[in-house]
Length: 124
Image 1 (spheres, helix red, strand yellow):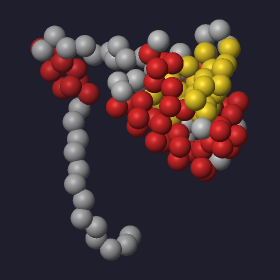
Image 2: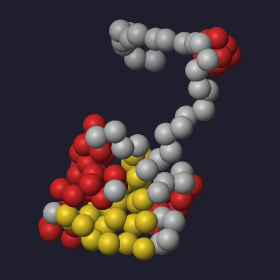
Image 3: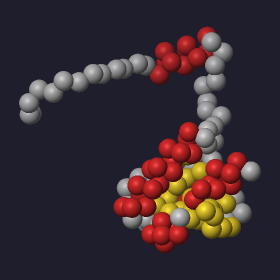
Image 4: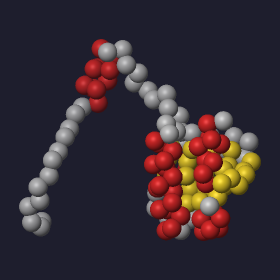
């Protein structure tokens, strides 16, 4: 129902994509593992997380961003399920101090770092 709305559509079959990749000897699986998962708590933190994810992607860092308003525990579970190397946690306290919590998901240790040093910390 509703008024007609102009739109554009696109469709393709997975089999065709795979066949074309195989013809060109391309990789079918992604080699870009998720380096960082950004968890956020609160609306302001969500906006900061979106900006940070764009900044990290521009730097060539593979990033996943939490969606919705799940608990921090749920967001960290999602980071684990994606096998993210790091979780970046942004909340109200971090926003006020221009910092983030950088959690190493393999060794389960976390440190507080300045927001401006996130790229350097992830690439080192």
